[in-house]
Each structure stands twice: as structure tokens, then as C-alpha cells.
Amino acid sequence: MGFWASMVDTSLFVYYSKTITLYLLIYVDGILLVENSKNAINYYIMELSRHFSLKDLRPTNFFLDIEFIRHPHGILLSQQQYITDILQRAHMESAKPISSPMEVNTKLSQYSGHPLDDPTKYRNIVGVVQYVAITRLDISFAVSKASQFLQSPTDEHWMVVKRILRYLKHIVMHGLNLS
Image (tube, rainbow, N blue to C red):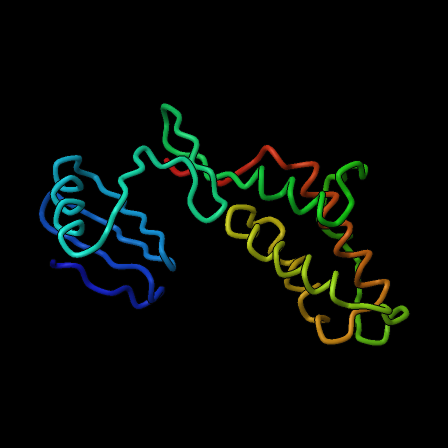
């Protein structure tokens, strides 16, 4: 159909012409088609429906736990509900919010602190918080640091993750603005 595969993401396909740009993102059984031309998207949805069973759910409000909030200047990508769910999963929904994801002078090592009895919760929370970094780039460094200790996390590493969660509570309403 004229799409070419992205070199960056194997699930992303792009179509360019003089006046039309389309992005086709496929994830398991979900397809997101983004365009700059309403007529073109209708044509490609019709073409795709000839080969696949499709449901047209326009306008898109959610895709992969990311909420699309339209406003006059573009779209805000938000993970507010996803973050709220993480806070509940970690039993931190009533935690005190904090204004930074990590203390400036935090030094972590595999030997700092006492090993966690069950590292499963640590690994789980770090994994889901990594996904939040898609729309909250400001947590990327702190999450990267916490991710270095997935093999054998300690109570000090867990404190870093809890601080990230407290920061997420502080900025839960924020998102990534695309104009």
C-alpha cells in the first residue's frame, strides 16, 4: 500500500507523498493510524478493512495506556490513569508528593543497603515506571538508575523507586505536549 517500515521501530510504518503523511503503528491487535489528511485516512482504513477485521474507533482517546487529550494547539499525551494505577499497585496512592524524581547526590551501588526479601515488587514497579518515561522524560535518568539493580535490589534501591513514585504523584496531571 506504499508504506515503508521504520528503521527505528519495527511496528511503525510510514507513508509519504507530496501532500500526505501517514503513520501506521501496529501493536499486537491494536492499530493506530495518524495522518495529516482526512480523505487519505478514510481511504487507507477502507483498504485495510479489505484484508483485516477492523473497528474504527475515531477519535482515538486511548492507545496502550496513553490518553490523547486534544486542545487548540495540539495533543497532550497523558498517562494519568496509568500512573494512578501504579501508585495503587505500589500502595502509595496516599504518599506525600515530592518535586524531584531523584536527589541530586544519590550514589547507588549493588552493595548499598540490605537485599530485599522478595525483589518481585521492585522489578514489577520499575518495569511499569519505565513505560511512563515515554511521556514523562524527566524521570528517565532516575528510572535508568533504578533499572541497573533489577538483579539484586536492596532497600536503598527501593527508596529511590519510592521517590520516583512520589514524584509521579506530584506531576500526575502532566504529559507530553505535541503541537
